[in-house]
Image (tube, rainbow, N blue to C red; front, side, top):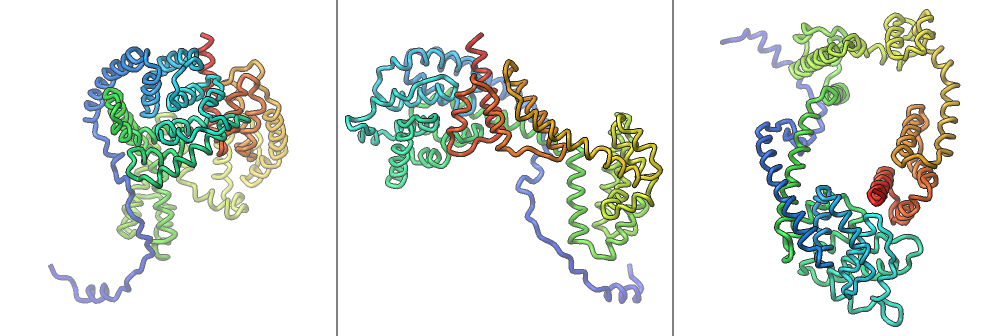
Length: 489
């Protein structure tokens, strides 16, 4: 097929468009979360059966067979926790540690490894154990015995235990310095030590400061190389890790298909088109097409814009279908008319010129309690300014009231969960009112007002080398409450 010569000349005369491209590398995840294979359900079911069978075997080995051997019993409980499968045996672990707590100070074994391991496990679970038990590992001069440094597993165990110290526990402060110094020396002088990797990981991030699920994956290879490891526990850990990972992948697959994700992706592409890729002439045409919101505008657009424009219209059609199921399809109209909102932000006087549309948008966006205030106004500008004037003062008083509530809200007889729910509600309310609470201020309020029953948990949190996060403090308080409830039941 031949083309007219004139057309060929005209085409060749067009200047080459130099576009600004950042050349971002593709996502490292690719589409692995979008392509979740439903056949995995069969594999998931099979793994679930294997996990259930292994749980029975592990429960018997850890909590029945080994119960008579104090040191081995603690070591198996520690392995279950480090490998991330302790959540399957919460009741059994709690009952086992209650028995350990009763006999812990009567343990006549002289090995530092077992004493330190028992101390750490008990304190992790909220049991009150004295650090004086470590005095027997000191010499007559009050220093830790140098002979202890030859036992690297014991030093690691003592090092991890020292991170659960409280205020004024000087012996554990000394223990942390003592173990850290010798472990750093062992790490640098003997790289072939089979515990070298474990030493490095512990020095970088001790168990107390680690994320259980992340640590579990790395500990599997370490535990596998331990000659005394339990095959049942190791196999359960590996299967459970894969099982949970498969579940997370399925959830991520569902999340990536949500409408919100699509809208966010579209906004990101739209931003790149305007800021970098599109030429001025193309953007003029593209803006006109969006304002008209008509599929027939596609032919006027460059090829790459056609793909985006078609996707944009489809996503909004999908949103409208979803909204129609809830009887709220009218809201899509305002989403499409967002250009008016942009004009208002850039130029407040546009509220008068676009009055009817903007008044409708304002009215649709407010609650029934303030609806009359807006509907009585003659223009959107007047409606907006009236609302602003009326509620600015009350918002200020609301902030003062909420902050007063936050500072003076003592737990008293309220359950810890209700206390934290109330604190969260006040915090969220202040954020919505434009006066968010600083994280350190929120932590201080909780620690001061939580009450005497949680003094130990607060003391442990305050003794950390790095500041505790808000989420970690809440988790620690709730865990402490759960452990107390089990003891009382």
